[in-house]
Image (tube, rainbow, N blue to C red; front, side, top):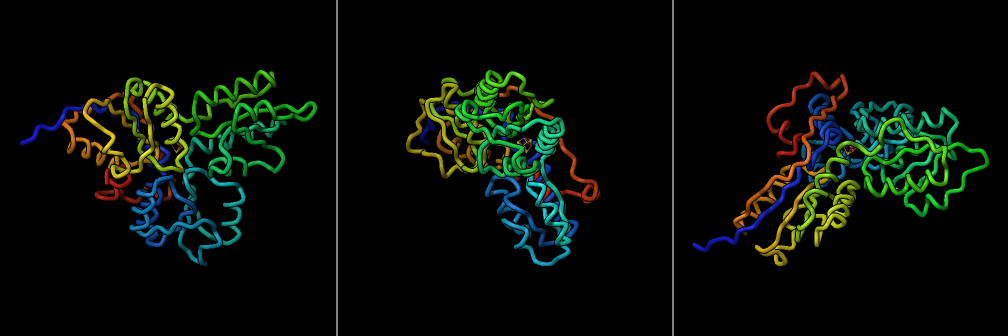
Length: 331
Ligand code: SF4
């Protein structure tokens, strides 16, 4: 028998599903159980193809706009990223039943933005143009009352109107360090800039970035499991590179790992974005074990116990067996 070469794989913790993603997936699964198929979902419920395809197999129908939904008593679910105010309004006009799976931490940012507005401030939203969460947050506010700031350069160039007071909020899934740089620059220019009363970048984003920062130094290759359109996953790749990993890349599954570039002398790091189910990480670890005598070391910086309840109308529906495993990312 040929001995497999030894290798160390550092597995970050926390990684993968956060409480908001878990809640959003639960809402779709429970709605399917309660109302039967089809249940409509506006946009990817979370940014992960594996999850979306799993829900499609159970009877969810994903749509880009409400106009694609036929006259029906079946519910439509809004994704974890949040939606502009116009979306529930349009659903009401069409008498569509809707369930809002917006993460409570995104809703909190919406409230903070509205509070700035109520206090007479123009809102600066730090985030990435075109991301569904940014579209949803901007869509809480009347046109002309919010400006998007994506970079330190945007912070330099933003022109406030005479006497205008300003307040900021941020997308929940940004780089903690980049965002701090942007806020510092804004505060240098606008000394009375009002902060939100609570941090906008969420606990899951912060914890995953901290874990990657701790594990990445000395890694030859660092893999982040996540989708190309997942903001928090892409930020983890950047954090790994900046924290000392020689190479870092986003992979959706084990087939995207460049196995011919990996050898036993390498130290490997692995993490996963908040929308990546554990089953994909397990498959990658199994692939390492099949090629190497891989010792998996848990590199854990904190333990999370956050849990967000689903809406009252779904709480009585039992979640068991394979549905439970799917919601937990284990299937
Ligand atoms: S990443 Fe943060 S804001 Fe987004 S769903 Fe998870 S907990 Fe909520």
